[in-house]
Length: 231
Image (cartoon, rainbow, N blue to C red; front, side):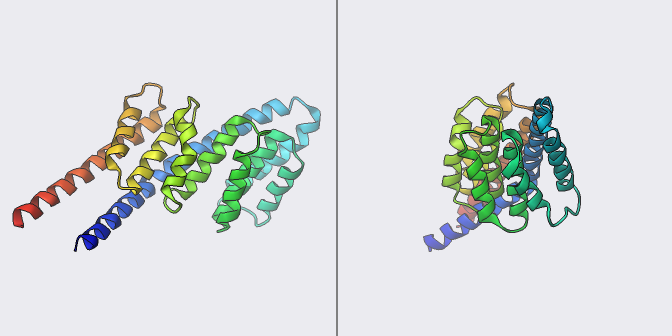
């Protein structure tokens, strides 16, 4: 009988993790896409100082605008692939990141993960974009891939001082929920809420997650108490 109860507890934790990811995953994706757009604008400004990069910048921005459309053209992956194959380094990396998202959304998950990993491992790519590749890869696999392996990928970002540290920490907490480590998840959320350097959006969602986890813990305690009383 204990094995049955353990399986039920695992299912409940998995359901809880999926609910949290559905509720807050959109914010995480939005935050990274906004960052991606910001980085793209920076590279556009920087590289447009060179006449040779003018055409590439125009082509990349056109493709990125198409990616934001409700119905992106079917040949959009090819457009980003062409940019990735011929553009200067900044645009090449941004094109690969966009291509990975498109491939994931088309169901080509292995190809997308490989593309993100390729960017993360590219020593010639800007460090900020290498970190973004890792973060995006984990984000899209939060509810499916091995949580321990995903946490290992996030660890350098969590232990670092870069701009993605708060989001990486928040993802780590969600992975802890998948692993049934709600105490650890709450501690991470508390630290994010209390850190004045954390962006307001991340702090707010961390507060919401903390309240959700607290409520779930209370419900579990109440259920256990009632079970003990009736037992």
